[in-house]
Image 1 (cartoon, one colour):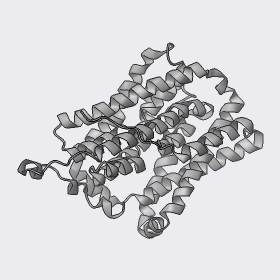
Image 2 (cartoon, helix red, strand yellow):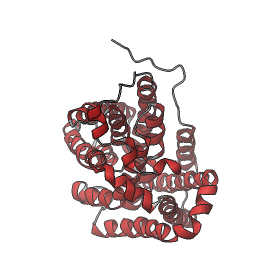
Image 3 (spheres, helix red, strand yellow):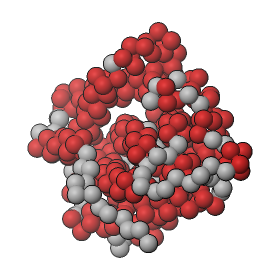
Length: 346
């Protein structure tokens, strides 16, 4: 039997370091009074601009071409918005042994957010999987999450998490979906500019999220929500999230095999169906949870780093797997090219 070998240097995302540094700044120098109003307004504008860029980047033609591989995308969406939330609801039984109510709500919110795009593509590419399918699956998940995540949060979290209500759902749809649609509408004029300046605009993306984190954690510090968390509870949260990630990685890999997907598609399903997006979850949490957003995003931040480390190991292992010969039956099945021409822009 082949064994998994941990790389000498695990992929500690430098951006996680920046996020933690931002949390530290918010703890030492939280925005108060007029400063808090300015930070909140800037955070709202940053979120809208962030989703405007998401809309400007997504090619409508590539998304429509990707629908040809619909079985794979439905599988990823089911993992993201059905299986994950069910496991999140099941974790309610771990309160109060491993989790308290605020951390449980944050963990449940983590299971409701959409999948990632960038890391799903990167790991699928390393593992020699279906990269076009990973591009489309991540894009579809992010787009669906703009509407599905707040609706699921309203249904499953209710008014217990920061006063979540129907007004909050409407607010997040307007604040996130409207800019996204505006980006899609203006893509014909600015799409080339966005593609040429992808790296610079990527920095804008990340800077916007840092601003959202600062505003959320500042409000949490002023409201005193961090006094509710103990080191023991954080340790329990890490254990629960490690189990959650292991279960999803196993379900996506072996479940995809049971559904008849080939190796390349199984890789795309595993990496797109087992992840949660920090970039999408942070802005949503700031809108939905208000002062409680800092606790709501803590499980997501921890899960994000954990998934990067574990999936890097798996992707490296998958890259060494022998690629089976293509049979007549395989050629008759949906192939990588059915995911469209997304690789031209990826």
